[in-house]
Length: 189
Image (cartoon, rainbow, N blue to C red):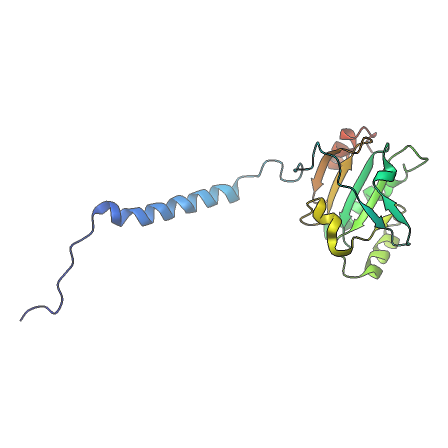
């Protein structure tokens, strides 16, 4: 009796080992990337050292604010949403910081609503944390896109000459807020 099929010759050893070795290398590379801390994971970005993108937005009260009109003053631009847990944690810091907004020369704190599904929720958040600084609508998230916002909260520290000096992603602690303040020449909290 003859076999119905014949055994094919065995491929060379390197052809047998290549796929598992490639897979193991890719798994090791992925593991190293995921398990090692990213450099500047919470700060930095492509806008640092560049002029802040222009913005002209309406406040929740209906007035208009443009970044250009604030030239000569340091600005903190905080993108936030009422549903954001870290935004709630940093809100008291912004309330404390906004008490420094006096006169026409000092610090300006601005909030920008980012992917906020309910303006009423934003108003409730502002009332709950007694936030006295302007909060701006960003229809279609155009400003967020111009600033490269990927999530909330993200805070941009803009010097009096209109240059982004520092970007912080994630909820601010007092220490991280002070780093940004120092970079725009504002006394720390």
